[in-house]
Length: 393
Image (cartoon, rainbow, N blue to C red):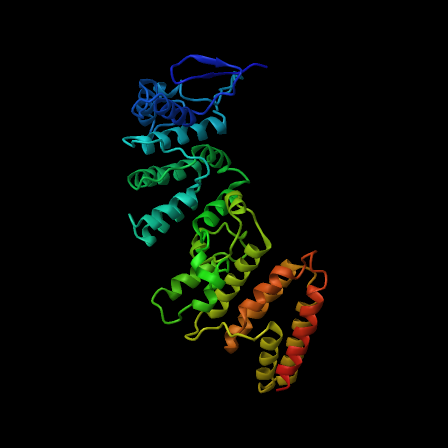
């Protein structure tokens, strides 16, 4: 089947897939430069950009001037409801119109996701880090595509002022997915892009390529923001890793750029997410850091057992704790291990016993990793020895 596309001059070109308008605009601008003229948009593009701005704040399908800028066809099925893709395209087009307005160069650029754009905005120092994060988190927590678009309408002019482009083809697909089951993948991609540490500086020497220091090692219990930070991390309990916008500033996991762009859910990210939520529950109400290097879950549970001996029901409490810890050691996979750790951590919090979250994250990464078939057995043996050594000390 032959397809046609409308060129910037308005003539159909046979045999080619039709470009989105924002892609046409880039092609139009580049063609003037290739022809040796001053790079600028043709009257065709300029006229349609004005049409897009007329659609801002209006429902899809109610701006007549936008009709010829749409590329998603409307089905002739007699139903009044517009397709989700058409609605998503409407919002993408109006955002592109706002972004491109008065910009001297095309603002559509492949590969620049929303998270990356916000990271560039933060680095540009046009806004404070807190201001950028507040705007990105507001967008990420939007309940539906209409609320999301309202937040983005306030964000894209800031990108334009800072000279930052955005991949509108990607944004179109993300808006299409927003009200469906793929929203988590979209959220994860934004968060991972925003927390991307970037290419290591060769001058970093031995530190090049290493992960940044985990949050639990730098946490300051005396900080005035400590309570809000811990609350943000606790909000991720039971949620899919990478999808909780309030947690994004505290992630430190390194990841290949193509995985970040796709919103990939890796073992490293899952382990860090679980460790962060456990640390937040463990740390609350304490004015000293509950990260303690060398305290494995076995050591921590053993110290807890030692404290229980001094109680009025010492033997019974110790036996109950030993049974609870024994069940933890039999965890079949990472999810079960995390579940048992969520039961143990409140007890450690009450007793003021610390835990090595670096060791814990490593265990959560590798417990059921098929590439490390002996990992769980190794942890079980070491933690069991640690428990009995600490309980009897």
